[in-house]
Image 1 (cartoon, rainbow, N blue to C red):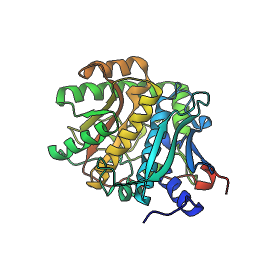
Image 2: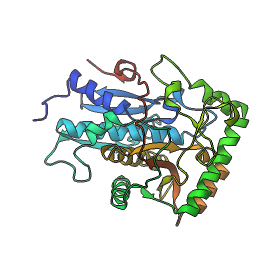
Image 3: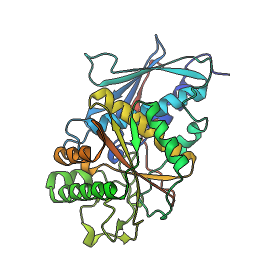
Image 4: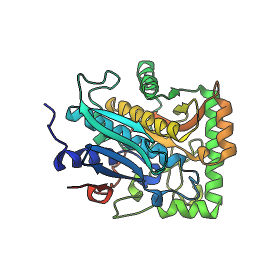
Length: 324
């Protein structure tokens, strides 16, 4: 039975689930406020946690907050309610990205697997080598359906287009490491003993062949990095939306997290390749690889391999404002 009120214990669990979501550089650019009069949770951007050089227009921030919003929806549903969601509910408050009000639920949402709540606590990015075995087609179709349920599309390019996308990602990675401001911004989020950022244990090795260009947060380049042999034919999923507005970025974030949680439920590991989306000309080139007028929002690497380590999260007391 669902609880009768949104009390402090339930609220803390909901927000804890939300902040378990992935975010670019683990910046966790979100904050939450409870309106006690309506029992509505406001999901707001923490603008001070944005990436000035990597994400100047805030697209990745919105995608990150969208992922947290999806976790919040899953947690509300797990508690026994239905999440009534509004995106960008008050245009005069641009930092208010969404609101979620728990209401009575007649039945579980048929679009969601029942095990997503358990998966959200186990989901981690894995920046380690995967096996050469491609996940089965039935599983890939389930991922595509998960993205579609959130208003986005997900597809799996063939070898030729995957190679082109990896080349664009590699070009972006070179620019990032050669641009002083971006290199410094990346390094500033390598952190130990904090509640945010990325500890060294989470970064993994670089691909010895250079075919799989994972982000170099250290800025030392391939010559000075720990290397390993990664899969030669990575399975890449392309997440896209039909339009490219703020609401679409939030939908993309929800679709991304839905996909990542379904993968986690199947014990399939994931990591994100975002570098080419950070340069307008390279992002345009990614668009040209797709079929139809779609805007690429994320590249997701999928496979079988070691579970990535957990990264730190800020405690609820740092991100939640309440009337309690």
